[in-house]
Image 1: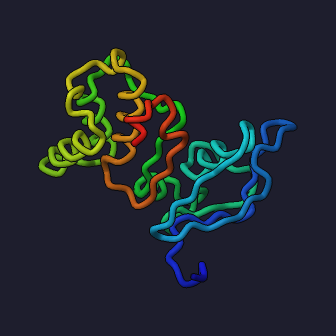
Image 2: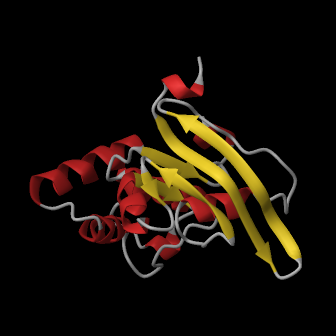
Length: 177
């Protein structure tokens, strides 16, 4: 199919980011249609994570632009964040919170309340296979469960676009499946 015939969920135009003399992302352009899956492959330092951080509005590009579900990363970062689920490579979580309290915190930040919140928590606990650790302190979770929790926080609001950076890092073969 032609990209013009498909709704573009991500569109990147001439995106660039440098860190001092090191150019991490050098004027890349691409588009991702609705229902498509795009994977970045490349060696360490190729700019994969930097690109994802720019698309999720954690880093500002030096030049170029991008839209996510029609929202510009520069002029409408709040719109981008509302429609985006993002799992960072080293997803942060509060070690002294329980899994459930952290996910409730994420729901609060995303404006998910009442029955919708209860349903979202139940659905995500089952989907990410974390029901057995919902009352456990995050700091005591294995790396695999911490990764599942990171995925849960990215999915809990049923985003239009999902960006996953190293989503299977630290998972054993069964967990990856």
